[in-house]
Image (cartoon, rainbow, N blue to C red; front, side, top):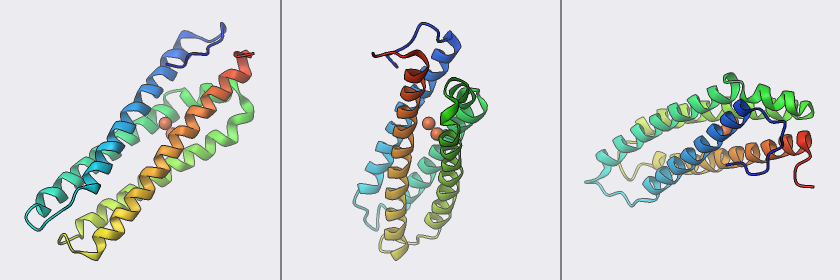
Amino acid sequence: MFTKRGEGMKTSDQDLANRIEKEHQELRASIDRLSTLFDAKIDAEGFVGWKLDLLWQLRDFQNQLQKHFDLEEDGGYNADLIRIAPHLASHVSHLEEDHRKIISDLSHILDNIKRIEGERSPMLLRVKDRVASLLTFIREHETEENAIIQEAYYQDYGVGD
Ligand SMILES: [Fe+2]
Ligand SMILES: [Fe+2]
């Protein structure tokens, strides 16, 4: 929950902000699950199961992300932010560009995982690196969004003086 709220904030703004924050927590949980899967040691015997598990978890993650981005972009959430804090408009549109990059990187990673043929494939190492940097990028993106929300509401209502 965002704790510092001003009197003038509409209930629908609060509901939406809380929903976004809840989704950020759920995304963090997915990222942790994916990191664990990637850190696991893979042997020849477990390879096929590992690869399938990874493909399915990443596809679910991509869908979870896309729905989260839809909520931010088309659910009135980013529009509210810009209405409350117009000076953040270009920052918000930069965050929307991140969404495009994240979804396209994930599609590319999924294609590459399909091409991994065994636990010793050089492609496996490349994919691990790309996933690690993408997960870091997503974490930073969500942290930036949380900060922008705090800034927007702080600016508007002068809370925390
Ligand atoms: Fe976002
Ligand atoms: Fe987000």
